[in-house]
Image (cartoon, rainbow, N blue to C red; front, side, top):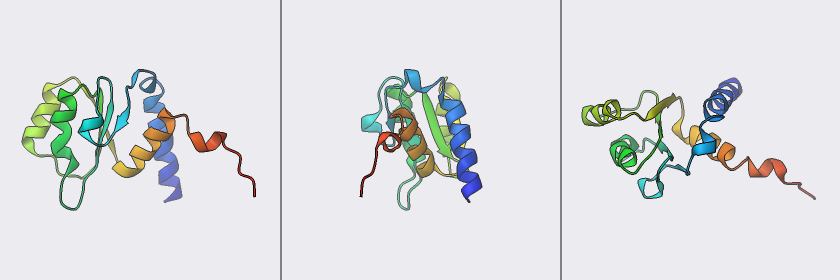
Amino acid sequence: MKGSKHILKNRLKHNMDSVLSHVYRVACHTRNVGLGSVFVAIPGARVNGNIYIPRAIEKGASRIVIETGSFIPQWVADCITASDVAVDYVSSARHALACYSALYYNTPPNGMHIIG
């Protein structure tokens, strides 16, 4: 498990080096998406985050992150194909959201010193 997290983190860092300098924000809710955002579609127990991908694209997302193996309705797949948005497939959308956010915000905990 530790190895897969390391691989995912390195892959995301490699993908995002050129992306994050132009990213408006990292979001998992469409109300937080703006021009140039990275939208992470998180599959849930009751609602599949993939159904919000067209709205994120409409609001200007430049990159979509989808969990491998999650169900993508045909109308969503058609919307992705019709757009020129970049798509990343990851093993864990939640972990990817954490990695993208940490890289976007320069991993704040790394600059903190803990005393005690």
